[in-house]
Image (cartoon, rainbow, N blue to C red; front, side, top):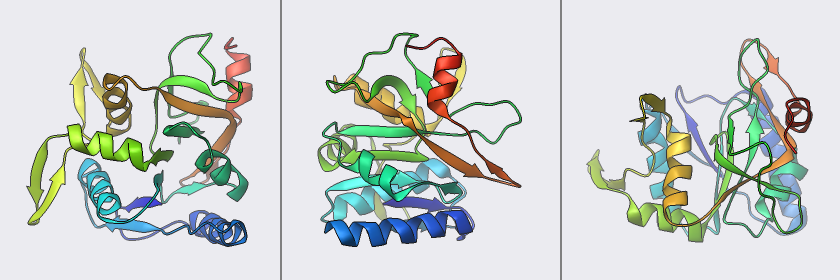
Length: 213
């Protein structure tokens, strides 16, 4: 599990969720190991460092979860155990108006074989799992650079595309799509976001309300 911590701190909701997830993993015979990057003001470099640590370690999956989120352990394993290489869940935006860190392709998105997942154009790295197959592919096609004498790759970047600023989250999805693969999302899972208050929502109800089928 990879978490960037800008100021070296994690929210109490994150810590509680992590403890519950580690304990649930122990019951399932799954080792949940948290890795962090701290005190880095460049979010794309922080995430690239997590990719590098995952490449260097003997890990089956890289599961990005942000330090200001709250999730259910059962939702973590529901995503982790999916056969699709890249699967995420909607994170509530920290805003007065309801919104989520997801880009859905169409009003009638494609669904996985069992119908549980929908195909999306991009999903935030607040709650996003990549299998080793996926993160190795992304690492290998990305430009090499050196940071603090460490060999890294520009897997995550912030770009201007068609006049719009595209965050590092969606760059991952765009690269994955360029390799001929799909990014999936479980609409039944919603991840809470913590700021000056806890932002909560229901992504499935949001889709239903806005005419997605």
